[in-house]
Image (tube, rainbow, N blue to C red; front, side, top):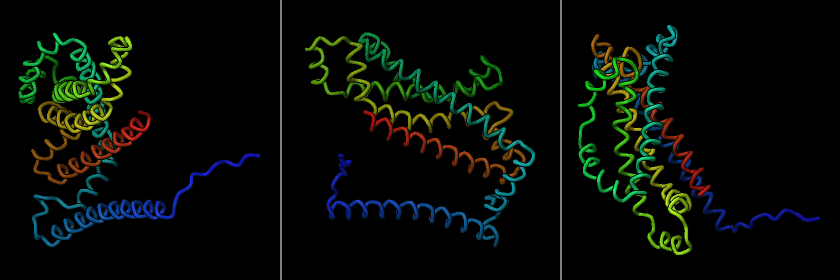
Length: 270
């Protein structure tokens, strides 16, 4: 009979791990406490009219707005519209950006041809393209998703292209010495070595996709959180505006947490 070997952990190492764990717990508790203090302070100063609740709303009024929107069924519809548009724009921006970055890495000729266009497109304020997208695609979801794609695509290409170029040249030369093809260099060296860059680009893309979708919904939409923000501003209902902003913050935070979880899995696999 063989007993399963258990890794030996010294007393000092165990104490160090406990210290790290305590520190992490303290950080989480402090973050949560700050959030509670922020909302409680907001509620109190609005309740005692230190600030005008009509202009800044207050947590209890936002909660009532959420309950009212939930009861008439429109809350989840608006969340789903914005979330689905963001996920589609984010996915398209990431995948298409990665494909174009790979093509530019593959062909030095294409990379040199595309370089000035990427610089111009990166510096161009994408919101200027909004009216053009609306004329081309109508006033549905297509121009909103295209806006999210336009904002995130160029940044993805430039980030990944830079990351590919920073891969250790010695590794590439070693693979070439052993007769590796360009596809093997890409799949065995460039992409695995660029996982942190890809994750970093994805993190940036999340924020840019939300910006693109909300900007698109400001310009043309009949539903979504961006639509609620514009509608609430037009009728001076700041409770609706602040509630939509709060929901947007929660959704973007959840999406970011998911990407951080994915990052840990990918780095462990790499």
